[in-house]
Image (cartoon, rainbow, N blue to C red):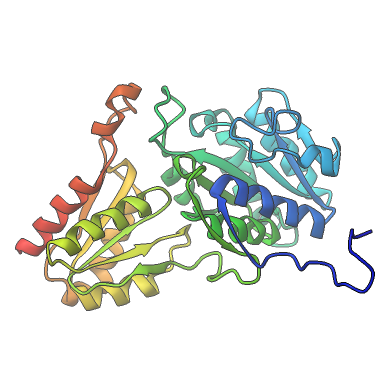
Length: 339
């Protein structure tokens, strides 16, 4: 029963709210669970504690322990349980506590989950979402700040996405859960706390669409997850120096939506790709190659990459040296403009 005076209407729910990305994910999960009783959540400490980053906080109280399940510390078991649940008609969502913890479940993901639909000749969908908090900028230790997304973008049978804003987080987690394909959902953990507007009435862009988030004319810069805020910062600094940068948010890592990327590159003639992951055999490498193939005659300079170094993630005190920042992005922009 609503608490309203006789003769007055109940207050309408807000259509837009300012939320941190972590709370937007919480709201998206809540909406998905309310809409579909087949959605269940599994992970280490996600029920009673609400997860290390509190993304699932309150969902066990609302939906019960049979739908928000604390699991043993066994990533292979978590993924295996999700596969079994999907076979029985559920839509499981697994949380991997930190990026570097995913590798005990790697075999289940890449050898089983990614291949089962093809193995059944398309007759059996496996709608499993695997949430992976990833990336640096939080001052943590080894295995807590890594960017393993290229392993999974490389694996046929998996889809991979990464939101950069609270609005995208709210909508993309719901769209991922609704998908009949297994989806790796990479959450930039350093963006869990900054707030942004969330429009509860419209998603803005499809799950696997890239999007221009700042228009410009001289150089295109492209990234995903936490790198998008770095690129926007770089574009602001460049604008003060009279340089016009266009920023593209990749959003979907596999499949990649090349339409907006190629359109932007054909306009600016230059592309800089930024990522936290090491450069060798990376998502940036694949995009650079494809752009060189499909927009070669529009390029005024080589496609340049700015990334983490090809080393294991360093101790927390060195993360600012390892991770790309606005200065490193702008140095690459200057090199591109010098051609």
